[in-house]
Image (cartoon, helix red, strand yellow):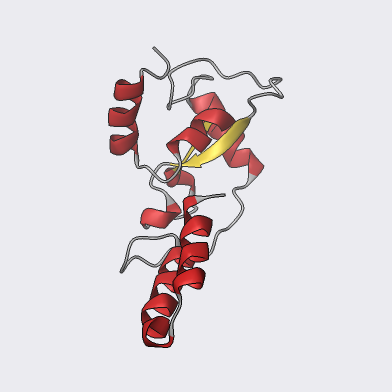
Amino acid sequence: MTLCQTTLKYLNEQASDGMAEVRRACILFLKQKTIPGVLPEKRKPVPKDWTMEKFINQEGICPLCDLEMNLRDRQNPIVPDHIVPIIKGGKTERKNIQAAHDLCNKAKGSMDMQEWSKYRQTHKIGV
């Protein structure tokens, strides 16, 4: 169960008439999964040719771990990654996309590259 699901479950269990408005606001916030005041764009699919173009421009190196990416790796495929996450105001546009390992992209989650860099150093990813 994710943190959001756990929190929603807790809010539902603790709901009372006096807390209904607060509960509604919390649920709305959690469902948005965004920073207050930043409206995420509607998620658009990233064209496959953008990912391949970025893969070539990056010379096959994942920018998240600095290790080589393999086009035939089915365990850890190459996926598009938003440099500035949508959740933080990034857009699905060519200049905001990079090719990355699927596992690296999942580990990065909603971090921007500066946050990811600190996280990566702390957890010794790709070292």
